Length: 465
Image (cartoon, rainbow, N blue to C red; front, top):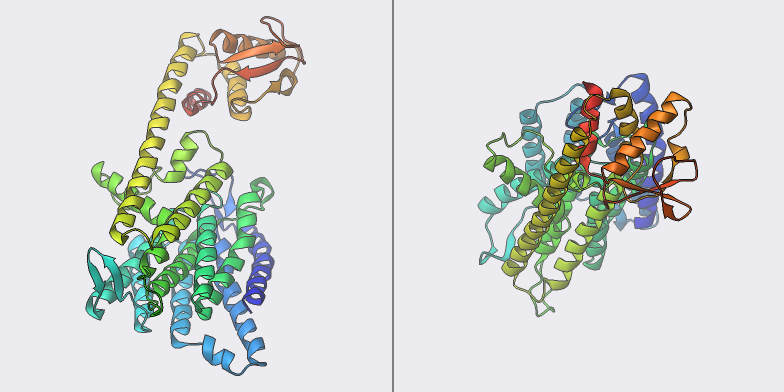
């Protein structure tokens, strides 16, 4: 049953996304690049429009078909709690579409997120046990309901804010859904497992178009607020439901469901907390977008979008497995502190690497200026092409940049000579380093292991002036 719903959702989303792409292009419902965004080509921002219809259709069809063979299936899966989740999804789905098409203020979205979270608690789903966090165990409804509303709204916005590079939000959500689905199956919670695997099926086709789609051919699509709000709500509800599970009396150890539940969302949640604290210390508005998220740090180190995305997915998986493995053997408060400490140390290490890279970039930028490249517009044009297209540490042939002849070919030779003089590259010909005349068989190797981003920025500024 779970696999049927998973594949129906996958096929439905795979069918809908190309249609959404076509409509987005014809109606100009596209996301324009700007200084805050990392993409450079216009792309559709309505990918999330396919999520809720695909999920609802897959679950409805699957439950209806299986109920023909077992009359209890409909009663077992179509509970009041499940229907309330669908109602809350519809609410955020409509707000998300309005925001992606015409724009909605963050205050307006925030109010509807609280209303959606309130609908979830009305069905009886709210955190009723903290499992020893700060010495607190069972909590009353007057405390658990507001806490649940806060957690749901927090997770929704965490998913929305982490959606900064291709595949990151959908990838992290997919990892979380995979773990949650497996955990719910292990605990015998089939309704929640069905929702988790069906949502995972809807994310896979989107992930393909988002990560591997070609923007120039209009095949790339973004999740938009529609997708982020719906996926964030489903993830938060599943996490709360898992946190509300009752302890098996046959088990001697107290299983900390709440820690495991939110471990699957650790990376986006901790990233939001760190970014908000950073904005507060810097005196900036807490809700003003910036480029201080974890994926921006990886990009600043020279990682490509895909490498940064897969690295963060691997990091999230490590945190999830670490918490699941240690939760029965380490005090819950110690485990939470360990997560925060590891996260903090990791970011301090990233920041130190970025500072070292920027310092080196500043030195190289100064060398370029001192070499007399400040006003050499035509030569700098080729330098921009060279820096942006040829990655550090790789070997390339001169033929790859000597596409012209005559005066332009001489300018390429001049540029290469500048790079040699500045110590940026070494030119190798038949296994020996040579300077002067470079033919098509000559290869280039960078002395530095990575290409400084500040040099790229400097050369781009030269071209814009």
